[in-house]
Amino acid sequence: GIAIILVVSIILPFMQVITISMSPASVVNKTGFHLIPTQFDFSGYTKIASDENFWHSYMVTIIRAIAGTASGVLVTLLTAYPLAKTNLPYRKGLMIFVVFTMYFSGGMIPKYLLIKNLHLTNNFLVYILPCLITGFALIITRNFFMSLPPALEESAKIDGATNMQVLFKIYLPLSTPVIATISLWYCVQHWNSWMDNMLYVTKNSLYVLQYVIQTILTNGQTADMEMMTDVIVHTETMKMAALVLSLIPIVCTYPFLQKYFVKGIMVGAVKG
Image 1 (spheres, rainbow, N blue to C red):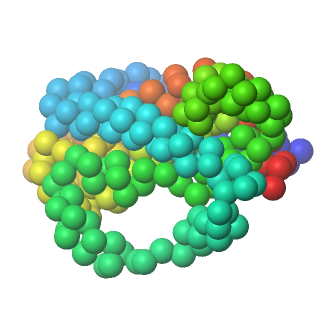
Image 2: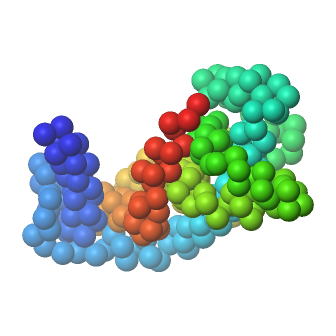
Image 3: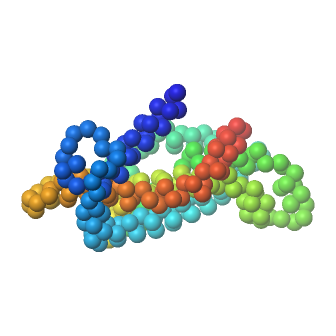
């Protein structure tokens, strides 16, 4: 029963967004839910499709998601592997430090000053380096490595394998579930981020998709009031069309990773 309520609470708003994105002003103007389109008007998609800034920000976000996910997964694997070793010096202290970062941060102003002093403002790397690794993904990956049989590494070491060879040739092929899981987390995190754009980036060429959409949602109506013609088509419908287009990559990516998701979470969470 609870699961059905949750599913309905997610599906209904999503259906309304899709319906409004392809409906004329006369339908959008009506109050209440619009779950199934009664009339079709793709003016919102047409307007978005002609917006070069939207598609440029789309490409910036795709590059950010790919680069951020790849670098995040690599750094997470390289960090989790040594932390999975029980004989690592100061291992407990390092794990306490990792957990500490999950609950506390320096705050917005100290972080801004740090970013500025590192000359990362108006730099694409500001999207990658500050969120290169997350504590929860590190803990899940580390626990997954701890669940693997120690004999695998011992036999590889007897054959002369180095730590890097053990990680990439022994552990990596067995880590598909946890890699898929943290990849999805990093990808969604980078795809949905816009606050760092607002705080640290002023160059239009570096704007990410979610910041552009946030601008459309916030300022779209006032920007289009001058047109005075079919204002709803150029505001609500356009906003919903932009939202639908922004969801496509994540919706297409999730089915390929979903089968590994639950296994990666469960295996990575049961070992402390």
